[in-house]
Image 1 (tube, rainbow, N blue to C red):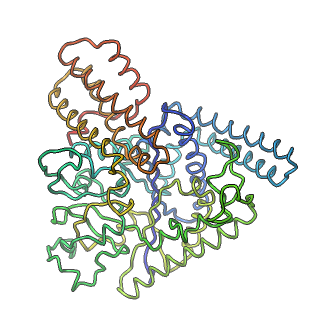
Image 2 (tube, one colour):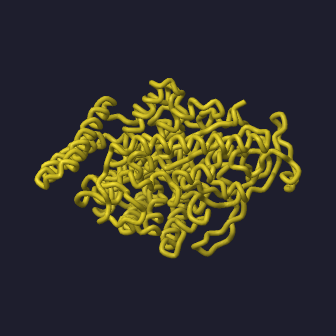
Image 3 (cartoon, helix red, strand yellow):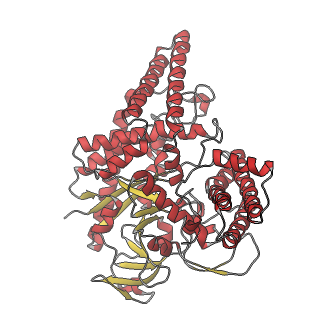
Length: 559
């Protein structure tokens, strides 16, 4: 019998960068992601279909990313980006010819050809990437997954209403743009919180009772989500499912039960209330994932792959290879594309062997078919790791021919390996230390103070203006947009990690300032006061710069 199933889950996200800068931080991120990840990924999906492989990929694009791809301004801007890249490649070829370096000339010409091909692919889908993704999903070649509206770090939000808004709007936006309401939901940063008593870590105040994210997702019609293995390792047994019926058990049940409790190869149902209600958790397998992510053994660090960090000019193209982990940027050797196919094939075979071995060992020791879940940030493939999509395609083609392994989408895995274990999870994430420290740190505490005070103010205004007129509601809805954008996990991450701290600070502060101004405007309008010139300009600027989520209503916070 097959040893088990393998599921690849790709999570795509970028913050709202349209109308908020170009380079080095801003719109360039979006253009690079489309050129290096999303257009080529469609090619992988199509190639798998042509090879008669039922595409097992589960794909999620955050609502804020989908909204940018669907924005009317995006296609022309992306075409201009591709044209600019071609001009850069052509200029590089002339420069390298002047150096007498025909190897670099050839690489520049390859870049030119690559961007020309991307132009053709983009035109072939009429500049409408969401429609192309939706078409493949409708054909059953992709499974779609939703996520929080702006990729907020949900466990640290103060009010349940904020979490509900991100979840419900996330599902609504995904359905509106892609035509399907997904059954899976990616919790940003795989960050989970259980229900129970909680107090703000940054503001004084009484403890409040909060719903667990599992309960909120289940009430929104979600079937499954993804967690990291350390959270599962700290899970508490709540019960078992016997012939479709939940049976409450003692917390010591795993001590005398061979169901594979807390194993990342087993599916578990998460139930904060301990009553069997909740969502199914698919757990990232650390031993398999480290083959890609590990700085020590990860495939992307191979010296023959394209070096991400070294470019020819500030925003130029890449012509060098990793060489070695110890090599400085000045010591990087030139990229040699002819070396790549062999190493990609070899590493794909190695990864397939690892997956099969892990599943066979689980079957042999437990007598149960397991599930290897491999969730990744989609930008790893093609962006950070130039050759990553080629590797992924080889992996899936290899495993499709492996009789011991069945390729499945996430929902397919849930259907085939229905969870018979119910657990309560601790709080945490897939970040450093499996906790909140990457997003809640000394340098970002002030951000959470602003977010929590803003949540309280918005809740009060919604209550006070429940029956307000159209002008007040317009100001409040735009204030809600600014609040959602302010809550994006990207801004504290940028500050903590230091990669774009100035941009993170600027963007967070800008949304916070507009939020306050719009709340003031709503209050004045409700009191019968006419808006002044500054308030009118604030609303106009906010609508022009942050006019995403046309589906948004104040009811998204009401549940």
